Length: 129
Image (cartoon, rainbow, N blue to C red; front, side, top):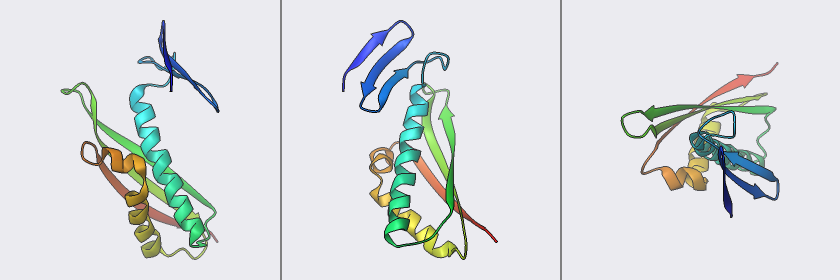
């Protein structure tokens, strides 16, 4: 990966496209947003793979991330709460929660930060009729 300094921050390119990183949201993604997006995106992707592999039927999954930062320590990320809402028919909450534990153990981003950022996960089921 190559990164280039620009007036408003940093730029890099990937196969999918260009990424602008800046402390000002008007010029790019803020670094903490990218960190949280990496954790949430990895976690949800691994969770989906587990559900699909087990042939668990769902209509949609929404993941909300709530971030706690410490302004006394360079605004470092201290905690990320990930709340899943799984929508579907005849969902088994206990099985979905157990699969969330498996996803946690297999998400490279969660495993990379687990000793420095507290990751808390919760799950709700939304039954469709």
